[in-house]
Length: 366
Image (tube, rainbow, N blue to C red; front, side, top):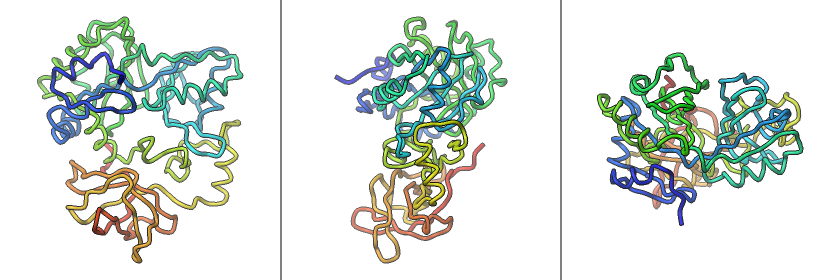
């Protein structure tokens, strides 16, 4: 039996195509991926991402535990700020990428990927030798992502909180659509202006919240969006997807996550392995690819080959960019082939297509 979010009935009634995603029955599309993608790039769209995991970490040594298990420096956070980070194994392989929210002194929320909830919780719990309490709030938490250039105007109708004052990677807790204690976070996975709303399903009528937002966004032609558009949007921005672009077999330095890997902070798991990897020089790098052949749509697992047809890597994520109307992909390349402008080839079924190495994002950040 697959897990379902509190919005399942809404998805079904809206005629969404539902799929198994990490053990959850989730909408992959409603009206269609292209329409939903354009809505987020040009107007506003709403995603149910309540399958994500939320852990509450509290106590005198909550920060010590977070510092041990994450690669970014959570000591720089202040209440109302969020941070993108990742957790590593001792060998530097990635456990998961995540968001760290500082609620207040000695109070944090960690937001992890849906398919990794139990694995991540067990991993952190195993490291917890501190005066810190770890609670899994995933089953009680709803999460909606309202994304796109008209997201502020849509949600501002429903709250007295000044949304224009919530800058990127900050958050506030306030009332929205008549419900109290909603965390309004200026985060997202699309590259557009937007918000992620966290609330307790026992205290907020989830369907009433959904309907209020859809009504508020009606004048901007708000679209319910599925995981298909979420994937095409994030790939255009070069955002990594756990299980595809980052795994236990990749490390943050080669995955272009060096900017959030604070090697000089106090001890964290994987630190020594990552320091050594940096000293030795990384052997491969996650890069973008633009594919020349319009018919050659790249998919995860397709081989990347050199001029002699020797396999040198593989596609980790690929699609046809809806915004650019071009085929794009990401994949790991040997460091000597990871230079921008290098020509390589992709094996697409029974033929080979030329590709050029580029540095993500594929779209300019706004």
